Length: 443
Image (cartoon, rainbow, N blue to C red):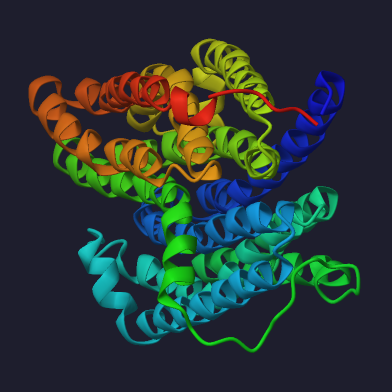
């Protein structure tokens, strides 16, 4: 594979993947904007308390979709088509089982879950409504996530991007229509979000129903080994989403104790913008995944190094531009979501935007390296990076810094944690060099 061809493939896959991931993240960002305009601080606080559950659902979809599609790509590059179909069948089966669990929780336990997430009397009803509908739409979210990953890895990244972009655009339109003309409040916001993946599945149907698709359902016996391989390679993508949920739950709890619902609403602005920012890094990582897995399966080790350099370079340039925007434009950005012109919320949100997003370059490195490790079947370092940034470092850091420095400590806990994990991730990459790049064999 020539350097020019590799750069062209990198540009095509990454640009389309980034657009698709931004579209997915905008499901919630659109809710945030329209809920802030239509329901004020109370609605924004309720939405922020419910968002971690969306992270869990989407993370489960990526656990199965990315894990299954990664193994599918490696097997296809080696000509093992029947085994690749078995991986697809196992992935869909596990997605169906997970969807049933989520839907059951939504039908029977939404109020209890809302209380567990910290919703009080003022926000409990809104949070419970959002959670119930979101969980009942879990089958659509999981199906869409799995199909996007397989369609992209099956040589149709344009269609995968079109599907997610169509769903996101429909979500924005439906959000406005349900909340304002229809007056449906928080129920309208989550209904719009729930319908979006349905549209994504329909847009992808020409591929997954077409004759040219490279994946097929087969009658196979359930195999724990195949399921385990899918889950092992998908864990970094799950933990990436769970880290967002864990951070939000932890920060919501800490902020409730420091500044109450006003602080939670301000954090909602920062956290939802963070979903979009992190989706860019996730898009870069998922964009290189099919290329990295193919190069790994074919023994093209020099291509692996170049793809990683391209990805990290792109992430660092984006991070520098992003932080400049948030540092200089914190006031106007926070004001977009502050429909009640609450000065306390404005001040907290501005401080948060300038401190929280210091984490951007480190988070980018961590997300890309975690997916990169998984793409070359290095499951242990991939899981280590994801687990460190998702749970093991951020939780004690947030508690300790909040106790010491109040809201400033809450905001800087994220960048400090991501910086520490980035050091570990880089050390793991250096340790794996002999396995990854023993000698180049280009074709």
